[in-house]
Image 1 (cartoon, helix red, strand yellow):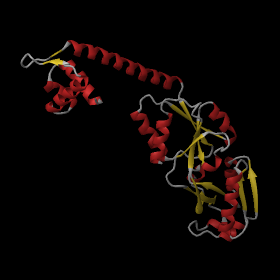
Image 2 (image 1 turned 90 degrees about the vertical axis):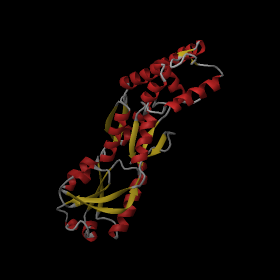
Image 3 (image 1 turned 120 degrees about the vertical axis):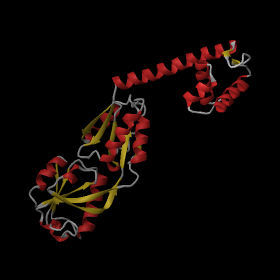
Image 4 (image 1 turned 30 degrees about the horizontal axis):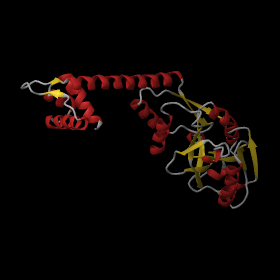
Length: 293
């Protein structure tokens, strides 16, 4: 017994006409007959009385079966309505690590999901890493670089990006080492200050310093840590310092900054707690992101 067998029965019980049923289901008339015969064979009953030429009627057993299926259909519809109400009352909260750029791919995928899931309701926030635990405990989802993922809390983690996202050296277009962004002067870059946000995880900080030293041929003149990436961006305007950021960082969108791709990349992940995040479409939405980013 298949869903199409049942669909054919419900439509034929409504039309009492094989030709019209086939037309409305966009299948052939013999296919309708085959589905009804399969259903009757499995149930071992006759659902329709075909004894009157050119006319069919539901048998008593067919009427009982139809009544039961209608109850099932009502339960299914009520279930979808309940899910829709829950989605409307409690939208899914998606949090990006502050400074991340919601890429065009992400926006496009989310838009497509909203078209195919009219009951999908969500809000997007940008938060700092120290707020991750509180957000996850409230049933929200975090999207960030894998290095920011809290590994000791037992949260669920899903890698979203198929390919790792590269990191870049970034500086103001006035910086002497970036006169030619395609072939920067690494010595001049090394002789200036590297500014980084102070909330970098230790694992990411070590990777930044290791790859920077290899690329520049030595440590930068000095390394300073500021409150946030927004503060770093202010200092970049001086033209006497540089920073590091991933390809999903909003810094790369500035017309006044130049960048150079490093031989270092990170994946982006979604983090949540399945016991707290009970939004109806959460898992399906995340799997959709995973399949496309």
